[in-house]
Image (cartoon, rainbow, N blue to C red):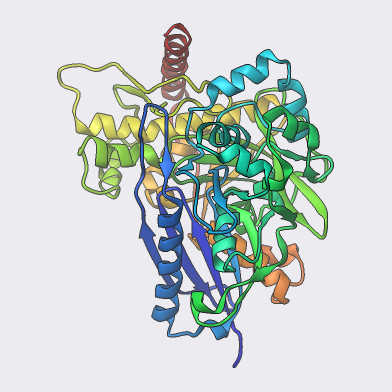
Length: 499
């Protein structure tokens, strides 16, 4: 039987998806399943890792059923995932020791503070390219070991396994036979040395983490293992894994130094290909791994916004102002080219780059008696563009000039939002014809392993634009919007540091 299809798994912050691609990288079938978000305390965000696995398994089986395919017709599997989210499980049973701590979670700020006071911050940033922040996995691992009964002793005895979501899914898919991660996900743990390409012993000692807990690191394209027969019906090799933002970088065809993309999902993530030398940001941006192939690293500069699409989800689920995200389109059209009369800072889980203020919380400025639903919706979407502008400004200060920004993610279906983004950034933005950039990126990586693609350069011919927005906002209006935003951010940071 010919193997003419690739299964790409996209495990995100709020849902899991499985897409099947043919040799032309067309989507043959897709399935998606949401899962619950847990907020047990202020600043805490958790997932049930077993629920995540079940949604992935269901999605894979449903996609195969929709495509009327057997697993034996799959040439390989690729996995892309929400990054930094951290879980630890028992090696003998495969059961998690506690809920997964999500990348948005802020509970480990005291651990970060302790490391700063100990003078470890400079070394951590130099080796990992990452700011010392609860965002990353290392302090989450430390917290789980110290706050789960018996966990540290079990870890020291080699009885536990750590993984980000890619690693957890691989363990489940292979029936516990493979405990591996890829280099891009490893680079988000704050335990991976960008310069050596390995787990760093000194970093492990800073966070008091035993090395026996950690998975083996592989390139983005590798033989990660094969699915257990009972999972999909027959064994299928897993040939590629990549963190979601790195996968989107490849899906967008950003394989040349200086090319940039921004993905708008739960958060917003601006990433620029930095080439073969790891840069050092002077303006609080991250240096991370873009991809690693054949042992050769390509680096990226990244800015992370914690709340993007999550702000729309809050409008829908938290405030019940809208019934679906699609309603935002009409409100944005109503306000086309002008600011909302209010300013919303959606710092629900702190501020990401370039502010790095984990204690910050959301705020609304300019409320009046006649403030209505439309103003709140538009302010929320404009806040996403304004947070992205903070990242672009920091990159410009680092000498990175973005002439064209490729955008993707569910929010970019809202065409007035795309125009708002171009206006606020004062930059051309391009939306691809193929929406599935993240899963497409990991499909491309899988195709490299099975020979459908010969090199990364082959990716470029698959990128086609669906639309392009040029900045059209009057400069005076843009200046007013940016000034109000800067004042709002200053007030939020001031409140955070004084409380």
